[in-house]
Image: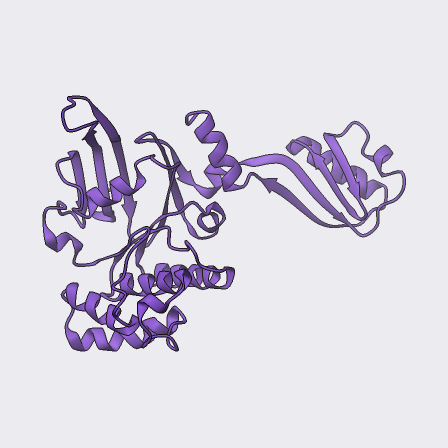
Length: 312
């Protein structure tokens, strides 16, 4: 990907924290990370606790300084405040001013972003509606549940109409209905050309909405790719049949392994050639096949395996 196509880039990024006030040794929170994120994409950042994910985000946003290597937003160094003018940010475990109402929080953060007051006021109402907080907009934040605070936090990340949005655990504390609404919002933002950078422990959410994923561990990138690249087929096939005759095991004898018959549903571990053979045998026996699904590994299964194998 060329520099002109990228909205976010890091190259050989390294951030070392001293182990103690009087110690000369350091701990590398980020250790030589390089990546590039294109415009209009939804990018997932995964890794165990302490992998360096949040530190990398903070380096890009100028919240962590004195790092080695390069970091760029819109082609600008994080020391340049203008690099953040088109950026929205929802931190993990954020703390909003409890004495303000939800509406006042959006107006405050809109003003802090440098947006014109009239523009902020135009955006606040629709944003409150999009995160389903219109009815609670004039209540104090301290009265909100965790999920409500998260929804207002998401709205404040969008109040400056950003082109790039960092979401650090965006669905934390949100109920299933709220998570579905956030997913819809992410899809809508992507459709409008907004780039989203998502850090989440809810791998099912990431799997549903992200185009590409980077997996980090101990400060390094150990794997990255599309969902198809990271979640390969497991070899398991699921056949939905119009009816399952009692001699089905005989019909499929010697084809694949791990045959399981559950009513009209048959599961079988096969390679591509064995799959063709199974289909041929079922049809030759006059059995109608209503559907075939090749199972893929879930992102959670892939993530655990990649981390345990150290990226191999």
